[in-house]
Amino acid sequence: GESVGLHLPTLSVQEGDNSIINCAYSNSASDYFIWYKQESGKGPQFIIDIRSNMDKRQGQRVTVLLNKTVKHLSLQIAATQPGDSAVYFCAENTGSNYQLIWGAGTKLIIKP
Amino acid sequence: KAGVTQTPRYLIKTRGQQVTLSCSPISGHRSVSWYQQTPGQGLQFLFEYFSETQRNKGNFPGRFSGRQFSNSRSEMNVSTLELGDSALYLCASSPVRGVTNTGELFFGEGSRLTVL
Image 1 (cartoon, each protein chain N blue to C red):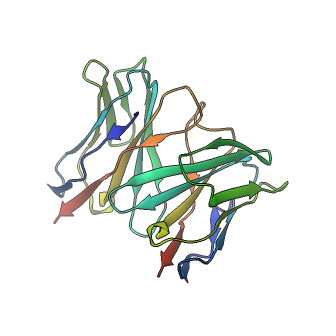
Image 2 (cartoon, one colour):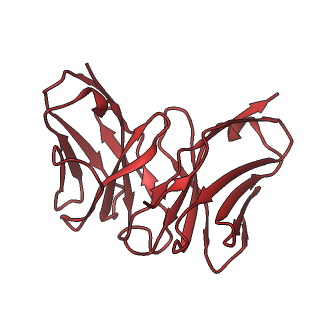
Image 3 (cartoon, helix red, strand yellow):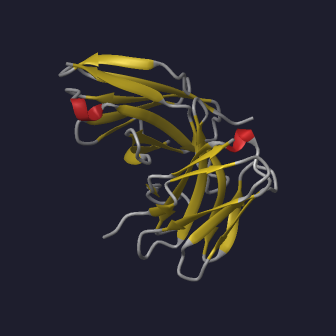
């Protein structure tokens, strides 16, 4: 079935370094992708999105890259800060309905 | 502007009982979606309501149901609770239906259900 495969690793990054969180998706028909951040005790919060007609999109300190050839999505966080500690989820929309299909999440830990 | 409000935040039930969770969306938002979140499973879509009508339903048994009121507030109900229903139940609101526009869903902090 359709799935967004996101390993559930814990990514440890030194404060100030860049973080890269990866996500693989399986549905080539997916045309819209979103990254969410979930801090402890809170609901997910929208970070950035990208449509399939784009390869790259930048926000404030964050960049999302989309490689449709290998069905891969990544989130890059520049100059990682303690406040970036959270679980990051990628999600995809296939366009066939209004739902998002979510990955399992990656926990980002910032080392001082 | 107040965010999405979910009540109760925490609750403990026993197997066989039923539970009702409430969600008040952001003012003006007409779409409410419900998700179940369990460790290692990410977010599993339960259903979406828009203008008091269920528009989409995920792959959950009929024990899971919901409704939306004319003021866009929504409730979800789980009957005959099982141990596996223990999870964080998240509600998200959006001004439009689904994710076809901005895709931005505004989440509440969730209701954490423990089934003993």
